[in-house]
Image (cartoon, rainbow, N blue to C red; front, side, top):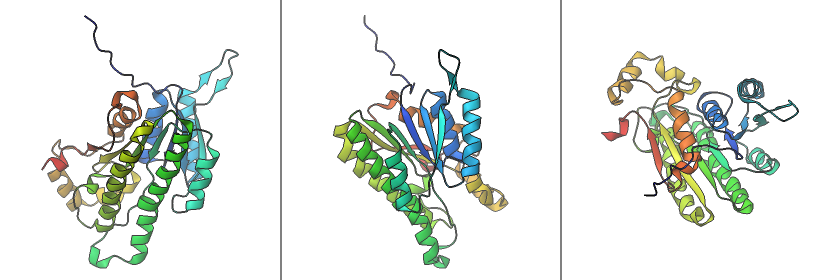
Length: 264
């Protein structure tokens, strides 16, 4: 009997671009992909944090050639996702991309009735327009390369449900879910897979203000069926899975990393 062979989770020989990678979910994704064998390019606005992140990854994972010379697995590039020209420059300058973790995002929480247009525009510029533009340009590059690829956008459980004081954030993430499915339909013929990850509240700088509010933490814990907050490590496996051949027939989907929140 010939047994089926498990597809590989390894990413050797592939290059990954990770946005919002100086800390939090983006940094965790970069570490996970590098550990799986990918060359990783970390992109963010905070160049000092980026440099520290790249140094730490290379210290842990740098390879050596036959002469003993260290070969870094991580590099960095400055990126402002609110500026289309910055996105264009990064994608044009990166020679090749096999994996995109479209992670950069911001939040301005508050009641909808108190939302200012400035808040709406700031969130949409990054979470929607910026993410859309990044995926568009990387997809074009992947088609030109002719070897397929994986695009993973960090959405949220709030791209599937409503949340307290999160009208603008929810609007941006629901929109991400929409164009992810549309793009998956368009580019499947090119072997490019397009998916989202949808975390619950993960301990990151972005969620710090919420997680210091006892009432909000009580509300959060009442929703998470696994009875704990998310940690960065909870993101790492799902990102490697969606980037690798192990998820070869998955596209146009959302991977919920929500501890059961959206189950009901």
